[in-house]
Image 1 (cartoon, rainbow, N blue to C red):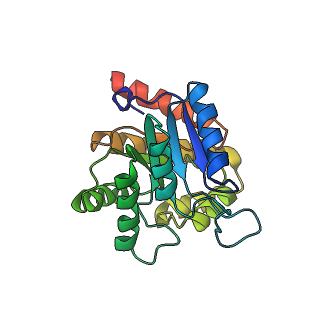
Image 2: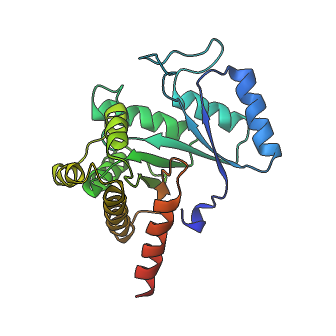
Length: 226
């Protein structure tokens, strides 16, 4: 993410399995350790459960966690947003309504769920601006490294894979290295288009595997020098 957003280390904090007192302790420990940037998320249902249920004494929605983090004087608060809509929201309009509540509760910037069509990001930003959401919206990019994994992820979060990209992935599904190379190339093109189109930076979903992200960054730096 670009330096002007002022982001260094960023912790991810969810509502899952913690009440207010436990969340307060976690936040205080993070702040004491020098972490000033927290991404506040509702979180997914625990493994084996199909629906999210709030912990007794905890929070049910992301905006509630954002508001609480603001009360705890977290210097910089991020929240999640969904260009194709959250899986639990019946309409895109209602999803934007809930997003506006996060921003009004104190979110300083937003990070999108993964997507593979840049038009979805730019259309989403336009829709967000139209309802008064004026904080930076950082696109979230997940380099594809595993065919079965990306199918599971997109099904779980409601994201879509463009038909042409899906066809190319299916051709290579038995070739891990070929999938990796396609994923890096596709994400690099995505990033270039996003940055050239005015995105404030990029958030990479690495899944604890940084090789693809390093390759993408190297390609972006090389392009910047040309």
